[in-house]
Length: 268
Image 1 (cartoon, rainbow, N blue to C red):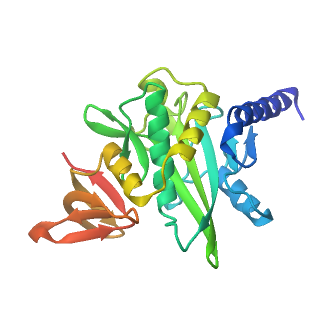
Image 2: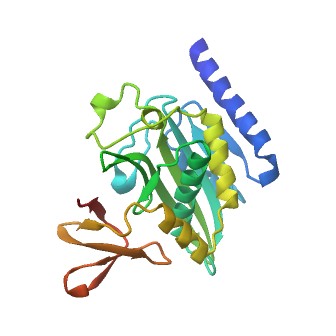
Image 3: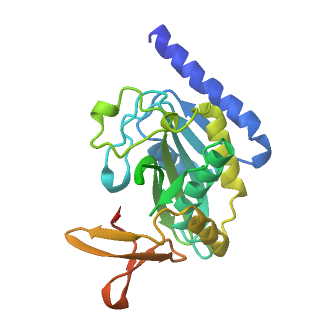
């Protein structure tokens, strides 16, 4: 193993220890930080099979097999993004699994506000965006995975948040992607992870409270949108979010469509 690789491994281990110390009062599970991994979500899904691991956290400087929604590849350079997943152990008789990705998106926006990024919004379902000349540019994506056994479930929610695009501009499929470095001074990655994880604990999972917070930060609600579900296309007005996180779109003749999966394009 090269000296450079050893330095990267030690640096990641040190960041995990610093983060654990700062969050000691919040009862997180094990916090790991790797220099490189396949996928932080998959790391925690495997960990879930080993016993009680509520609020375990996996972070990496680089992912080789990171995925976004619809199995899209998540592209990032080393140390150019916060790549973090959180594991929740859930009682399915009282908790809605879909609320956990909403919880993480709200936590991320709140933490970024405290770090001076006040213009961040949420595009349905849980993308974090910033506006450039009125057009949404994606800063972060969130992906949730779960396994259910009886009345208990494991929910792993992963966040990929661009800190800097560095040399990636030419590799990205389109220009509607941004990074914190393009809208302000990029924060230290440990400070960023700490802020988001604190908000994970502080963000109330009560359905009503969560929906109020989501609506506060939503870029989608109250706008005209085009919905794409497979081969189906239609336009309407994004009216509200249900308690399960679905989007209600009012189409022609006042008919309401409930959207649980699909692509949303904002119309001017």
